[in-house]
Length: 136
Ligand code: CO
Image (cartoon, rainbow, N blue to C red; front, side):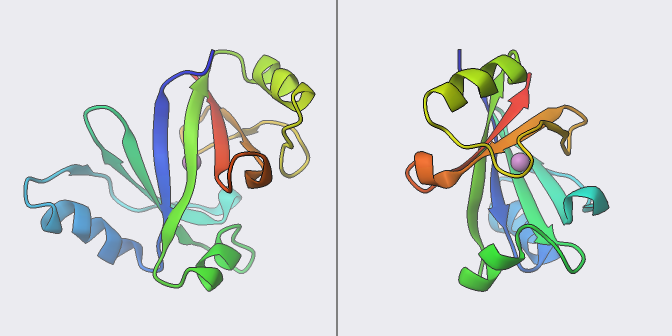
């Protein structure tokens, strides 16, 4: 069964400015992490902890960032993906591919920003939304 919404990821051109929005513009405040470079994933991340989910801010890191093209098309940033938790990522992939979904990249789960296996499903099968699955 599809589990919790783990996070919504927003690609941003300037992660410090984006983090400041969550620290200050939302005047009621939010728990905002420090920026963490993730060279293996080509992004720098900030996590905003909310009571029921997280917001993942993503800034490109390095020449081959997977979000570089997205930001070229959306220079001021935008929602990049949503991440759902699943109990068994291998079983979930198998079932979803059998239903016609397409896994991006080499089709194998990778260790994501939280140290857990993740995979991405192509947006063409999900109304234009890139889907990340994370092992709960
Ligand atoms: Co994510």
